[in-house]
Amino acid sequence: MQKLIVANWKMNPISAKEAFSLAKKIDAGIPKKKNIEVVIAPPFPYLECIKYQVSSIKLGAQDVFWEDKGAYTGEVSPTMLKNLGAEYVIVGHSERRRLLNETDEMVNKKVQASMKAGLKVILCVGEPKRATRDMRQGIKEAKSFVKRQLQRDLKGISKSHVANPMSLIVAYEPIWAISAGGAGKPDKPEDAAEMIRFIKQFLTTHYSLLATPVLYGGSVNSSNVRNFLQYEEVDGALVGSASLKHQEFKKIIAAVSSVAYY
Ligand code: PEP
Image 1 (cartoon, rainbow, N blue to C red):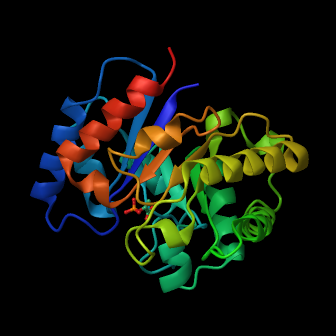
Image 2: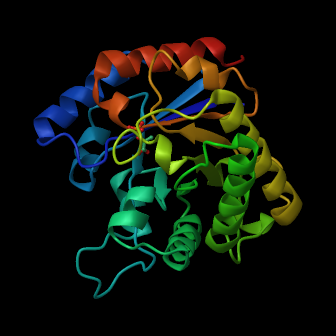
């Protein structure tokens, strides 16, 4: 399976000019090998114009609303995103859950609407903190937190909704490991791999989803990305701040491409 690298630019950069320039530089550095897919999720206003600047990068949005059109001031629908050229959409990012009180019920509606519109959903899950005194206990608690999130966020989703394995992607992002707002220290690769194995097992057992890609996110950079991707079960990375520095992001892409098969 291809490895997936998703750049979440969050509310950056400040101008369209900078966004186009960054996208073009990243696009130019994508290796010709087809063993990776690189997705950039810029702020909404840059989506359509970036589409015309790049040839290898796929586009994603950072959020979506669950209705297709109507009186929903400020919202953007799944069909609008598709029409703008987005193939992917990030749903349930912890910053939206925390800062905008996005609930699992809202996340679930977004997942369903996006899938219906044919967008590939990148569903973010992850526990807010992990006990440090007893790591095994911390991981046990993290598993039950993530399990609860998946049960709520994927309510009503069955194998029949997942048209192809890429229709649903899960990003395991322990909130405490995210560079902004967290402690800024990545998870231990072996713990992240254990969590990802657990997520895959849960999706297989409860949703018959045997091939859902699961990414790791949280303070990924060019020095540590290989440590995560060396685990076969880690299907890629969701990258925040490091994706805004094009040299650094290019190094991440090269590192992932070097560990990915075929
Ligand atoms: C994120 O917020 O999705 C993220 C992965 O951020 P960072 O890489 O900056 O920790």
